[in-house]
Length: 356
Image (tube, rainbow, N blue to C red):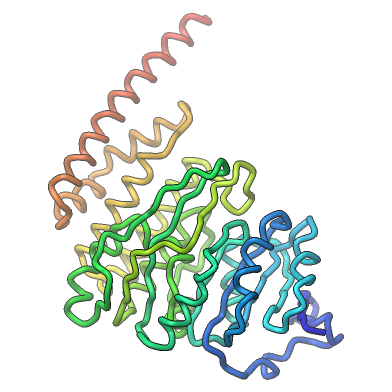
């Protein structure tokens, strides 16, 4: 049988390998390989084939680790239809994509890791590009652009904003602030990362529960440890905004805000010294800019107002080396949101008085 299907057994605190009727033994998978592709899977039976087909059409030395996170559809059955020994299926209780890919990472054997979403898809030459990088460049991270695609086929490209090429030593330090402040860095799917960086990240990352900003914290951690990054501005990965996507479901503004504060506090205590003050400020700016750019319910504008009046964010942004244009955009956005907040507040008071 080509597939390994694991079930967690609470009584033994181990995973049971259904395919052989015995408990999982990591020593059986000690053989190393060049690339591990990790895919957290949850109710992706409609999309997973589009992602797997171009990967498995190659004959490269790689493994595809699909971690089923308690799917209630036929995702696992669809994956098992691919009769390819490079595919490994792990089943676990539902804990979210963050825990799923971390579990897959612990089972991986590849020198390099890439983590993909099960309801996205890739270009046919995506794996070719990765393997060429692994065989010739040997940097810690391959960093690419990606497409954001709507269900109607409309596409936009999220670009990195840096020249193609290898960044290391002082050259890497000079652009880390831009890397951490860009929109692209926080998507794991656009990074091929040396495995040891991910493993080190597991031992130093935030241990609590987060409902958002998990990718942000992961990538800040990874970039803080990287000694070399290769930039390729071409886009090979398609991030698809499915209207009914489970893996891309939104969280409330309150959860979003609380997660951001948890990440920020963790970075303040654990990572600020590693990534530097400018990189930390850049992260603060982008995180807040993202928060203020989200569509929110009227009931959540008290929280938006709280964010805008938080001196911590303003101080970090003013002291950063971000461009004047970015700072101006940020503050105009704050002014606009304050005005909108006051207008909506008056509107709510008026409506409440009218009812009474």
